[in-house]
Length: 152
Image (cartoon, rainbow, N blue to C red):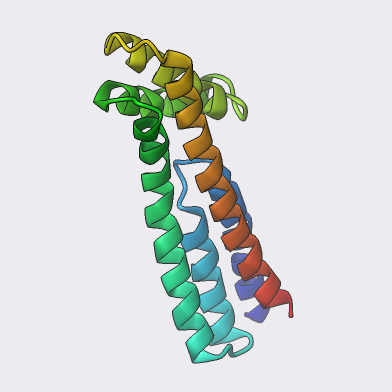
């Protein structure tokens, strides 16, 4: 039975890392679920550590959604650029994986900025790209930190 739990934990950790890059999967929450399974069935972890990691996962998950919007608005984009970057990113997943996510967010924000008749389309598109990359780095660091805790 323990082997099945370890396999399940490994699958959740792998999905957590993949979900840190692909927006359709919640990466850090999946890694945290794996950590909870590890805590309850394999080896106990300090309760304070579990609590603070849960808070970290929650904050990173919220920040991930906020950073892309922040990047677009900080660069001068409006609601069309924000929506364009999100739609472009989602379409990029299906048409040009894995790089389609980056290209899609950039092109979507660019098209949205064009629809707003903005004169700074490239700046807005790079803002969307910056926001997506920042959120991805935060999620990857969180997921890898959870893996690190489980290995020690």
